[in-house]
Length: 89
Image (cartoon, rainbow, N blue to C red; front, side, top):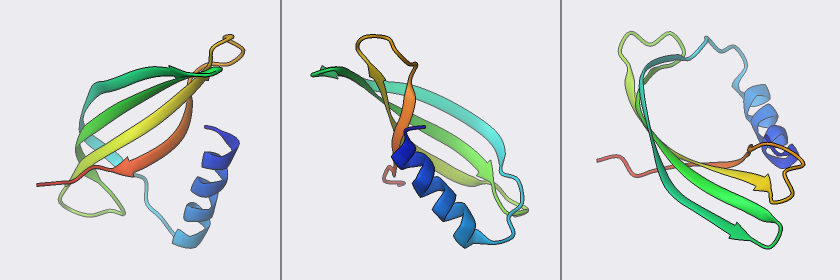
């Protein structure tokens, strides 16, 4: 994760309090776009599937787009830079 994304995730986790592990029931990925801007490569990946969170008996749909970045010079691998919820039907 980028430092900014890690800080945001940590804040979200701190606000949750007690939390059960998330179970991924099914997961599909689709590469939506890869671009290069200045000194960074960017990729957007859409993840869809079913997850079971907080001990819920039934899984719920997952539809998220993850944005990843990587320096053009190869000094690091792909880092998670953002997550947004895609529209569910």
